[in-house]
Length: 110
Length: 115
Image (cartoon, each protein chain N blue to C red):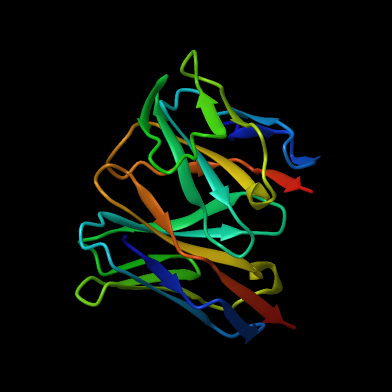
C-alpha cells in the first residue's frame, strides 16, 4: 500500500528553527497536510498545501513540497516550548482518503 | 463554531467486553470518519460515512467492529467483543464534503484501554 514516512524524534533549542521532514509514495496525492497533536488532545490542522504548489508560508510555518521526490517538510521558525508536540504529515487523494505518517515528536528545550 | 465532540474521553474495559463510542460532528458536515490511533502510530481510517451511507469500511474489522450514522449526523462506533489489541485512541473527524481539499476536523478522541 501507499506509505507516509517521518522521522520519529526531533529535539531543538528554544529560538532555533525546527525542520520536520516527510516522504510519501502516492503519486496521486492532491493535498498534503501537517497536523499537530498535543498530549491527550486530538489532531489540530496546522497547514496544508496543494500538490501543484512548492511552498506555502503562514506566519512562523513554512511548508516546502518537492513533488518529484515526494518530499514534504515543515519549518517552524523561532521554535517555542509551546511548539513541543507530535507533528503528523498526511496526504489525501481526490477521494479525500487520508494517510498519516507515524508522527514526529518535537521536543523544545529552553 | 463548535468542534467535533466525542464521548467518553476515556474508557477502561476487560477483554471480551463491549464498548461504544459516540461522535457529534461539526454542524453541516456531511462526511464523518472514524480513525484508530495505536500508541506511537498515525491514525488509521476505520470507516467513512457520507451523510448516513458508508463510503469506505475496507479497514474495519467487521467481525467485531460496527458503526452507524442513522440520521446522517451523530455516529456511534461499537466494539464487541474487545481484544487487547483494540487499546488505542479512537478519533472522529468530519468534513463538509467528500473529495477535494476539504479539511478533516478532528475531535479530541476516546482513549480505550482493554485489560
